[in-house]
Length: 136
Image (cartoon, one colour):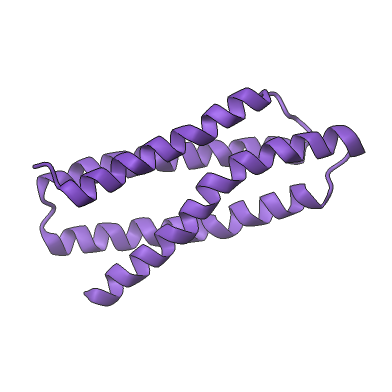
């Protein structure tokens, strides 16, 4: 079971990189698009990062559920799973923003994207607190 946990942690680390980086990259992509009038290398890199980390997120969730089943799903793990589900919704929303950006549609302001980016940090802190403290 240790291997499942190792794979889970590794994939979570990779997924979190994208969760933190892609919304910030959208800000710079938006600026690049305004300057060039078309998608440049930053847009391609942002899309590739999102697409690659999507697979890591799926593996992280699957191994997390597998490990949770092995633990017998204690009460704190239900809270963690709920918070991870909310973070996954945030990630899917990010994917929607990336897809629109590929079409040259940048509807959100820089301020919105910054706040959107920080919500994932708050969600991650909440998940880490639940895992470390195991409040119930």
